[in-house]
Length: 206
Length: 206
Image 1 (cartoon, one colour):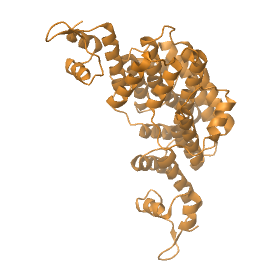
Image 2 (cartoon, chains in turn green, yellow):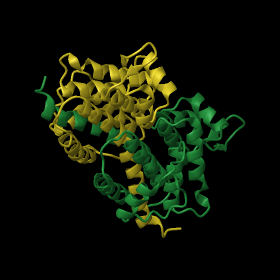
Image 3 (cartoon, one colour):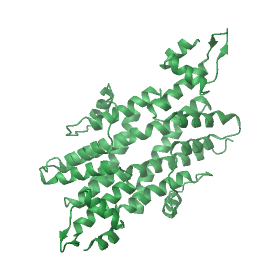
Image 4 (cartoon, one colour):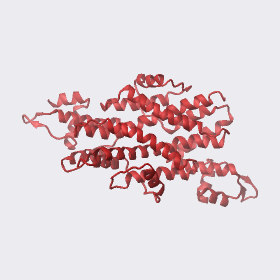
């Protein structure tokens, strides 16, 4: 297809498509003349992914580029699992490393989670969340954390089971977008559910 | 207690305590001389809350001040439920209003949620999350959203049921901190659970 069709199908202005081409976020098309090129379905998929990451996903162009680079490295031997780990790493750059990951490791051990990861990122993120709860003297014991973990595990098991079996583009979209887009959905639903639950308990107490 | 004890008990440097006093985030103590004042348990509670909100909670001083103002307005007739709604509003200022809240309203209706709210914020947030998922062509049907909603409802019911019955300071801390601090915990646990689930499914596919 020509750039105008590509632009229309993806819902991205032609100027933006040209900008992505110049930035090499989008690979060049096949030249058919000095001023024209042909684009394939793969260009359209890539363009939709960029739009989803930068628009709906709220990622910066720099993070989007890093994610695309991870995805492009798939020709080298990378398992789907390593891919998920790399994407996870990119999506939430950590601030300070937490000093103490003992509690986080205890949660992971008690959940029987065998993560097969090489980077400390995901564990550190849990340690940071737990440290914040501690610092605020918020009462949440180990068992309560495990209760949350079991709920998240049930969700994750279903999510990973629902990933289509055919590898590559579809799978990658699934993993990246599922990670980015489901998080705001979960938090929005939790806020609503909290308001509903508090309405039942408290709305008469004015 | 004196300011030095207050500082030590809360783990906040004396200079910072003085800054909070000047900014009126913390009410003045009872003057005992020209240069000394006495502080009560209520000062310590407030200081710990500020520390938790600005530190662990990652809120700006401006948002912290707004939250404290909402809490301070409790002498006027405000139900606990309205308090939760106001805090929710402050914590996640929305960007653009979503054009279409039909799907979000359908989720709320199908969940039988009776929110008793006056602001559109929580519904808009859900509409935004759903619009992002749509924009990315991520396959997630209405039933799948309801499945997530049921999981969040079960969590919220337990969370609200666990709020202590005695009103005021403790309750307020519970609601505000529970909303702020549990969100990063849930997301950290979900990422780990996803990695674990993908390790089981994919780690052999290198």
